[in-house]
Length: 224
Image (cartoon, rainbow, N blue to C red; front, side, top):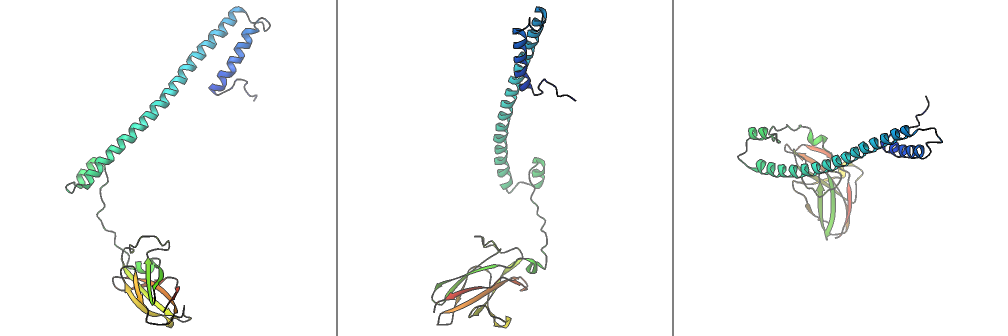
């Protein structure tokens, strides 16, 4: 099927029709166009351009009205959120009132924790620092990203810390239990008077003192 010579989009059509009409009117005799036909073509052009201009003005107004509507919605939403915050913070507000308002009703149903959470939770991360001779500050974190958060995962009571003098031992029997700590950091006062390399590792424990998997060991040089 041959492509139509008349452009489809209105903007392209408007530019094209102006060129077409102007040329035909200016060369009407050479093109065999009578005076009445020329008048018909000019009237058609005027009718199109008037309605096209009206359409464009409506489009621009609609765009402006949409932007104005969006601005007012943002303002109204902000006001609604301010009132919602006040209503939610009010101790006397009931769930029935929240439902009637269509705002969030707090979920008061506690989801029971798995008894195996100590086994499935990723192990803690530890960062020992020698802050003074024979003293190590051991900070521990709840996840592998080492964020500033010190909150323990829900259902866990703290960490069990183990250590080994001389670096990471080749046998599990080389590790010695150091402490159960419920609040980071833990201070380890080293009994060895000489400078020594100490390895540390830790694991979560829950309320029943069940132990989780160990984190990767970390070593540090401790001055005597």
